[in-house]
Length: 253
Image (cartoon, rainbow, N blue to C red; front, side, top):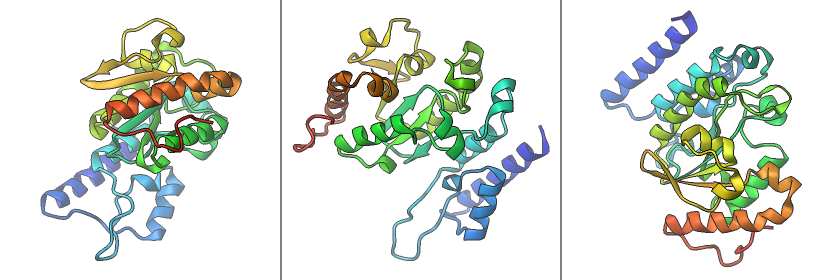
């Protein structure tokens, strides 16, 4: 175990011991958050405490913070580790009822360290809002945490190396439904080999969690007529969760 990984584990262990002693939140200064950012750990992974009487704006389970910290220093995929600018772990509500899973980060995501922030991400945000959620209310991640060179399709060994991080995210977040954005995301979790056109619109299950596969937002940018099918899939997700389709947003623009 390298020194950084050991330090991370010891820090998390100390926090967990504090939790067992009755401490529920830790106050973190702006300077500390900036230092986390400098060394490559997302400030969103740091638990915060709100002033008395207010709801904490960002509470991150220590276990999820541990997984993110390990992903930040992962070098199992040597080519990806050598080329990456950022490890793009995930973003959103760690208690989300919906989890959106894509294929891999692109250039914008690699630069900013957050999944789905480019053109495809902006479209995904519109879809999420049309469903009646805010982006920060759901959880968004990718199968791969590092950008493949030239946005090529992830290789089987890269998926195998990164999959434990994604499975840990799913197990800790415990979403009520997963939306698999594209065939790669679904195939990473399930043994299905059909194309996304045949897969979308049908429910699958991963560890008792229902999964709805649909077209990736990047595909919609090239094929805008497919937005209707995606919106049909999202309505099925809302129905599965017992939510109504927002009256003024019955069709995704």
